[in-house]
Image (cartoon, rainbow, N blue to C red):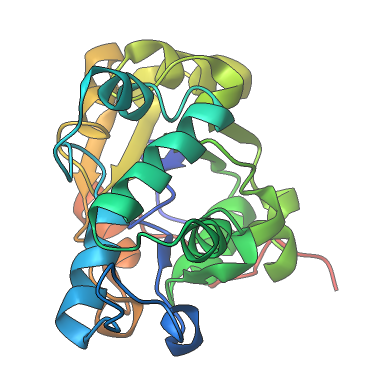
Length: 241
């Protein structure tokens, strides 16, 4: 391994190493208040609203806004907030909305980016600590366990467990303190300049990736590492046979 300026790499979850990409079956039978199904355009817009990292996707009253603002701190607010988004996006049947919400919060329903596993294996194999820092209200560890890489992630800094949300510096400090690394030797990779880029406030470096569909972004993580000066060894080099 070539010399690297980093001892740890932190990854955002949604839009960075996994992406919520609906299966066609998810919206089968889902209708709006007029009984119409969702065409491809409305499906795409619905998914955008469910996955955008910052901003408010629909108009909300004070109570709804409170739940939305705090959604990643508390699972009950997360559920309330996203059911509001679904309802105001046209999914007015409560049972249909609940079924869709369960897909959103099921780690098995998230699609992994093509280079996520080899990148994490390569970093861990080279002795670079790996962490996940996510604004989220459900446990994503099963998604990593399904791929057999949960043991390679040394810290999961999840907002609903940590009690802080990006861009608050506390969630990044939790990650680096748990890893026992210097923030100045830590790289954060994410898809939001505002949320993930805030890692710079505690001294971390930052690389931005685009939250493209997984089929359209085969090597975004590799390119982010290269831009930061990290050239890992072959994927899986550190695993024992």
